[in-house]
Image 1: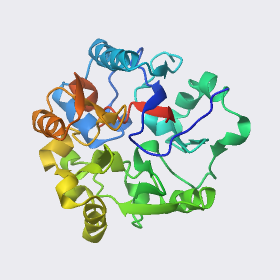
Image 2 (image 1 turned 90 degrees about the horizontal axis):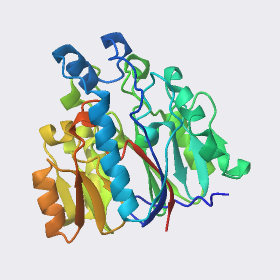
Image 3 (image 1 turned 60 degrees about the vertical axis):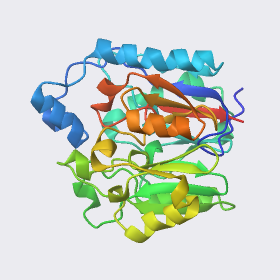
Length: 304
């Protein structure tokens, strides 16, 4: 059996689900796309090719191997996009919470059933149907759970609004000893530079006390300010609108000292090294075209 344990974003990683780009199927139509960045690349004829994305994910798998991390992969479903493992479920403490994701994507959960079968059934949680939540919006941080959300009355108009307040309340009930802190995110169906698809598209803790953040991703300035105060301005790497668009905040921590990052993130990677991090650079620019990067395609199961 798997003894799940995830209490934060940066403790030493022991086991993880890494998505797969095998058999992702034909390029989606504009109507089938879930985010403005994918739509942009479909229109421009630059939508990523399966072979390129397989190579990118293999590079990440090799980094995990180097650090002796146990890697689980989804079973391949023909002509089905299974890259973003973070969307379909997430772990907090010893519980795996299945996300209520878009109905079109339900088969992605079936593809990791071989992993779920290794978890005691009482630790596998399915939230009520009206709780919409995806793992990219949920970040355990010790006694806190940070959650990205959108509570506008026009929630249903946004394909990019993924986590609602019902889910925030359900998480607080599930983990009464923790403080669930919600952040309203800026949403746009049409402009990728004005859209924080998930919390990890505009914010992520790294190391022991540092964070990457993009101010405009937050709809409410006081909530952004709360994070700046919490981490301290001197510990924050502020990213620009273009850097958010390129997914600078969506790196992935193997430990408090080791971060996997996209090799083109020169400004960020330089800063990380100056702060004493080991940066494992990988190519991930093709996967980024679907508005997701390293954190989106990984689902940690066990951290120290």
